[in-house]
Image (cartoon, rainbow, N blue to C red; front, side, top):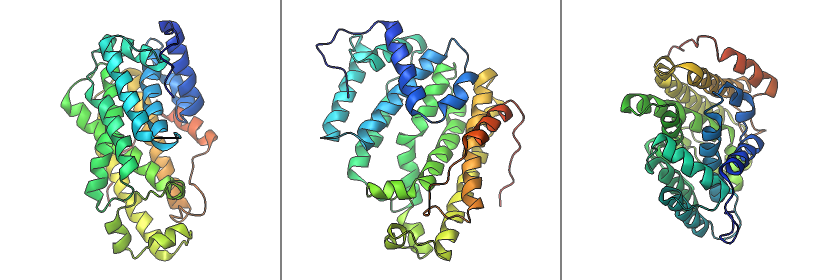
Length: 293
């Protein structure tokens, strides 16, 4: 929920502390990778991710009229650009926006993704799913690039490949969770191609066809990770290590799906915390490129 208009706005320090609490308490990757971030940039990264977390929570979990709540969120975003926000997340974000001259478009795209989630629960084609990723995932990468000082389309394109891969990985991990909200992100054309029905998914039937389907989805997700690997070589410092960790974590999740025989229905495929810590260390090491099959 947004802060009440009658409440006095927090100080900038209070606002950034609130964002840090939101991110470290809710966003599963940050306890592992936040220490990789330059100290001066951490508050700004927390502000951006608190925004991302907040808009996703409205689209996925909020009670009441989610579209109306997303409209409220968009108005508060406008206030952040106009200089008069009241919610602590937006007080911090407004300062970060000014500091790095971040355009409004990627923030708006994330709102649009969550609006679509209220109306669209199936994707007929993989291309349609990729289009959704341009709103739901790729803007996050653009925002991080702005914070780290990169504004060029070449790096943004490479970031899009990595962010799309991470989003697809989440979809394959969350098949059963998404079903609880009557959402299926596996493209309908792929379900039909591999003779897997929605009833198979809902009944958690791990058939040979289901395993082949998910092996197919996992492999082409690996290809998107491969497409984004070049970004690691054209950024510097801690962002390079952060990208390695995110890529390794995504690939580890795909490896876990494969290790289970591509069974994504019996339980959620996850990477253990110990494994994530190991990947955090490996973030400082070279990342090998996987050969496409």
